[in-house]
Image (cartoon, rainbow, N blue to C red; front, side, top):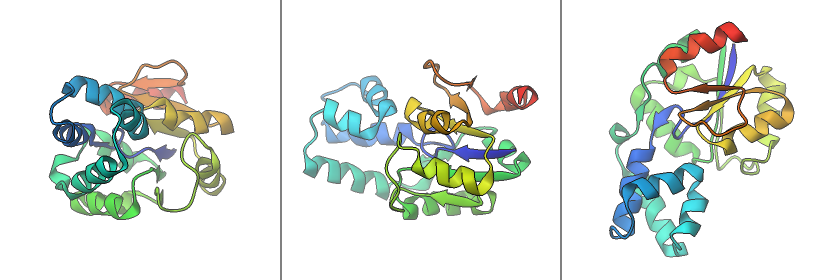
Length: 188
């Protein structure tokens, strides 16, 4: 099985750390659950929702980048899937150096054949250019993400999709825990 993965909120549970940084930045003007809800749409959406200035956006990114990878743990059981897959690739908006730092920390670099990062020059999701590039190179079977934004490009080019911890309409499969991924594999 050849899998395209989103990074934040899909492979790694980074949203709690993002939420803490945003909560601190907003000086507690918003509840953490509302911050998380807005961030799960996208960072740009949250920045607009909370009327962040360019300076605040820069501050958020610098603070988030400085957090220890310990605060950005992989989801339980996801490593089992990485081990079973023939090919794993990542498509993320996160800069390559930040992805590499986290993967290095958890010794996960060898699991991935390729990473398309936010600073690689591809248009941002939901544009399908990066997905198309990875699919042409690796003949992907499924794309896994935690937001609709992550699966729309895959749907556009005909790859099966899976939403993780998100039940928004539009995915081919849904998972709450990677422990249940074998149930999806049986259906492919």
